[in-house]
Picture 1 (tube, rainbow, N blue to C red):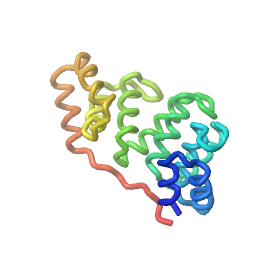
Picture 2: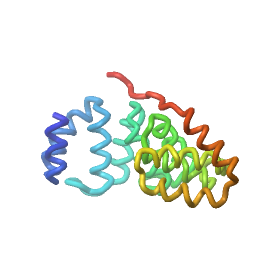
Picture 3: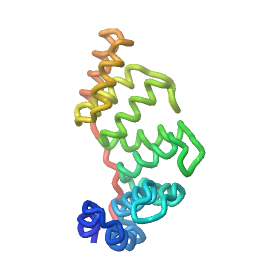
Picture 4: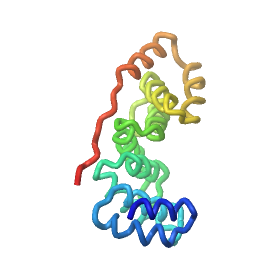
Length: 175
């Protein structure tokens, strides 16, 4: 089962993790699909294969799994197993960020700051970084100081106000 796979994975027994997770992934378990994607992405117990990673991430992402959406966004941003595509990366990061995934919120903030795949918007960049920082995402905590140097106090207040009104949106598909 999933827990047995997780226990094996944490002990770096990747063969057992694969044995436990693959049948679950093939039956539509989004967490198992995401973890298979991760194992292929990093070559854990399997040869590194970005295309296999993308396929498993995509299956889980389509089921609404925020971690897989964030991982898929990273593959598009870096051009791993897919042509580099900032707009597609932003789209997947945003779906995960809207569900409250801190890593994805940090990515969305970064892309708003850099204008990658989306029009540059410092207020949106600060808002998403602020949300991610609230979850203890270290790069986002550092980004807030960096962003503040390019912003007026009014812009920072506006971003914090938006962050205060923000609510996560559920997307997980019930099987």
